[in-house]
Length: 238
Image (cartoon, rainbow, N blue to C red):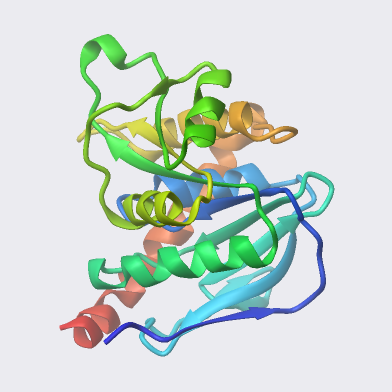
């Protein structure tokens, strides 16, 4: 049985022709940390929430204000939407999450969805950004951004399903592959991802002088949420 998801938008916005960033930590915390850091100080407004009766029940407080663990932010000037989540979603729910994002992107006429996936790259490719595209036009965008197009490989989780659904429905999806080190922190890979997104998305930029502090705050919040909801998730997902 597929999980029951609902999306609640709390204010109007217009990002027609714009972009959606996937901030779910489906494999590691890199995408969630990068999306949180990218939004800091860049006029992103909270415009809605995503929740499910199958998600652990948790409230995230920021500056005293409670909110859901999965939130939707929009920068109307840049026409960029971000779905940012502090929940690590188990594998059976990845397909439904991806379909929800595809549906939301279609509703708001987004031209491109950007996600990420960790991959341990060989030494020769460590300094080269590699990405996968769902369509010919998505692959052209990767090349124009000065990145290599992944020709052969496996991408799991929500990013992999976004690619598959994008291929089926003609939606441009780009998944940036982030080099990971088994012993390394999420911060360095989050910086790499943020910089890659700035090459793909017009107007999006990363303030590296602020990013380390913000990434450390985001990483702490995400890992605290992961710890607090682990027992709930285990009992719900079996």
